[in-house]
Image (cartoon, rainbow, N blue to C red; front, side, top):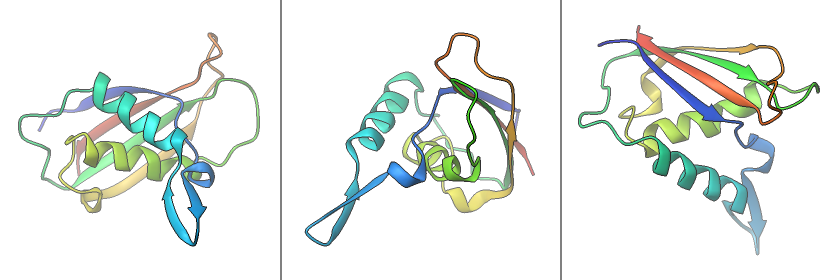
Length: 117
């Protein structure tokens, strides 16, 4: 397996991924829009990665603010499985999130690096 590099726009935090309506938890509009964007801009692999992997997520926020990188993991991992990049997020044996400098364009993005574990 070769190293895969993906660039994602700033993700939805796990705190705003779900909404509770009449006792049911559903995906929020923001999360659905993010998944649609991902599926539209990152074509699925012919054969999703099925090996154990390690992932590095390099966060470049839209502005300087305090944030917890772990609140963004779920959204990104869900994109990897919905977009058929990975077979299942249980394949991720090593997951690292690194806070980087602010995006000079002010939009925010995440560089995703996937390697064989």
